[in-house]
Amino acid sequence: MKAEHCEMRGDYGEIRLLPESIDDLWHLQHLIAPGDLVFATTLRSVESASDKIRPEKVEKRPVRLGIRVERAEFSVHGVRLRISGIIEHGVDAGSHHTLNVETGYEISVIRRWRQVDLDRIDRAVKASVYGVIHILTIEEGEAELFRLRQYGPENIVTVTMGSGKGAEINTRQAFFDQLVSHCASITGPLVIAGPGFVKDDFVKYLKGKNPAVGDRVLVVETRRIGRGAVQDVIGLGAIEKLIGDLQLGREVKLMDDVLMRISQDGAVAYGTRDVADAIGYGAAEQVIITDTLLHDATVTRLIEKAEGMRAKIIVLSSAFEPGERLDALGGIAALLRYKLGK
Image 1 (cartoon, rainbow, N blue to C red):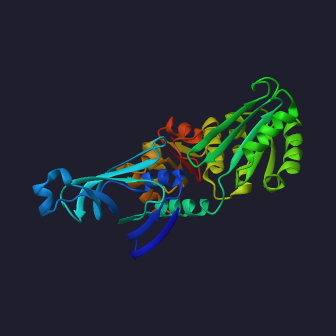
Image 2 (image 1 turned 30 degrees about the vertical axis):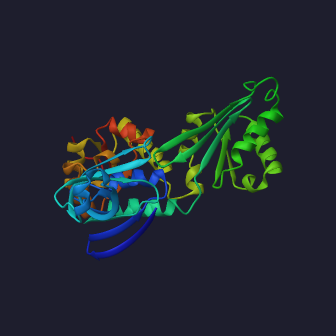
């Protein structure tokens, strides 16, 4: 994400945002709320006098519009963010319009910015500095390559020894060669994880075949492969070693802490009512919410109150396992400075 802070008065003002990846579009969905004013250059049918005579000649032309947002909807598969609302600035003021925001499409957002919003922008900007992290999970005869997105792991390819035509991939060397080929285009950090010594053997092979990729490898011991191994890699802190700002590693540890305290009847609160009580007593040290609640009016008021009492606000991705676990607890929890009496 590229971001430029324009005219600001306190916490209100304009920030220009340029999404560079699908992750950035996902961030934008959680930054833009109903009531915000969004400016962008878009295509819209604009009639001229000659168009009225020949309506079949009406064409869409690029215009600069300011939209008062009613909703923002994002689909991972659609690879675009649809921002719909009423035109307040530009042609056809008062009409509805939808901005289809894709990567490389610049928008300007004018609103009152919370610290949690600015932190999200900061994370997105920092993430763009690094290459996308990949995790290769491997054991004898089977491997899966994942791209680690900020909304969770994305499977890129699965390679199984013996699955090729004839004897093309029936040997370990052929198996390794296929994996080297899939890793060749990776420009960012690569974690290689799995049980036993196969991963170590592959790392040696990779460094011999492609030193540029091999030198960016971090090896992690896990008891399994696949998505479970990705979860293990995150939980062990390996991702934080690569990019300290990456949210996912912290999410796993936070939810482990929340669930451990719940099981021990410790200093924790969950659910909107109990968290609100904890914030009211000044007991909340960290308030953890899922991103789907950021636009909930009640939760927004709680966040503002918690920030005013110096509590740290942490937002979890609802598309990844820790966020799903938090959703099961009501979407909000708090780690407390001390245990509250029931």
